[in-house]
Length: 424
Ligand code: AMP
Image: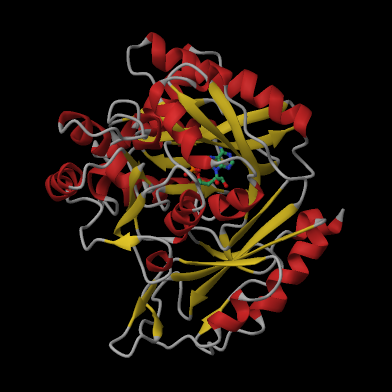
């Protein structure tokens, strides 16, 4: 198979690493990729949103399967563009990617399919939103309806914060058109976990569960980030609860999407809150999580490529995926200043030595190679240090032992990734 992965982060490096191990693979490309991905795939300098160039490349190179990593091209319709060009693409159509592209769409779907979620209301007028906040009182969660790079959600402890969020989203348009409408929700209490499913339109196959760490600082402090680390499995979300969430959340969503004529094909990611009344949906995403993907794929024993192909073909019914019983962890190394203003350009040394550590995989997220071939920071989240072990303690120790071999004074990481599991 000739495969094209789209994206340039740690998630796409992990996908490429996994696909590269498949005996079914003839050749792997990644657009645009990064220096880490270049070790396992041929990188093509085409941006993830340049659909005409991506389709032309896929046609010219007779690509058998396109695998988009990030949400932006999916929500903008990369799968439709590829299909129109005669190229198979395992990712939801633009219509199905609305599960990630619009909060109100997902909330309505939850109501239609009886999926447990926070009570909610949608507002197109700031006055009505403000009036609702005054009537209901805090705490409340205010969400920009559209895509806002993970930043369009404010968990407001007070009425003042909720009103400020409405002003910022609906009036100042901090997130542009994404804030034209807002969803205001009941605030759920509990532990958050992520559940992943590979979907073929009708059938959903469990693709792992993980817990991530969104805050930049240790002890869950400081601003939100794209994710500073993750681990799997999650002791607070045991297999019985995972099965219940597959049956009560993922499968009803898939059935409702099919019933509406917009079947979901690809990776469905459910962000869940484990509340006192069971798991409730916080959000759906239309792709693998980053960095959860990097923690999950090292535990997958089955070949990922035929699973992706079967999802594309609508043949997951008779498919099975095997996972090893190990624990895994991913620690994100970020450039100083992240998430506000990450410093670019600093040199990272010692990567080969660190990558040679036992049970360790290093994925590149935001790196570039300079003219001399030195690896430099080129983004906020820069490296993903992944490790597996017999239990979470062993995986944790292996990851941080590898990190200690990386010589990058301008980078930092959290040292408490997986603390909930370690505390048990
Ligand atoms: P979202 O983009 O919808 O995943 O929201 C981002 C983060 O906001 C989530 O990971 C939660 O930590 C928090 N959040 C979102 N909705 C709620 C809710 N209804 N109750 C409590 N926390 C929430």
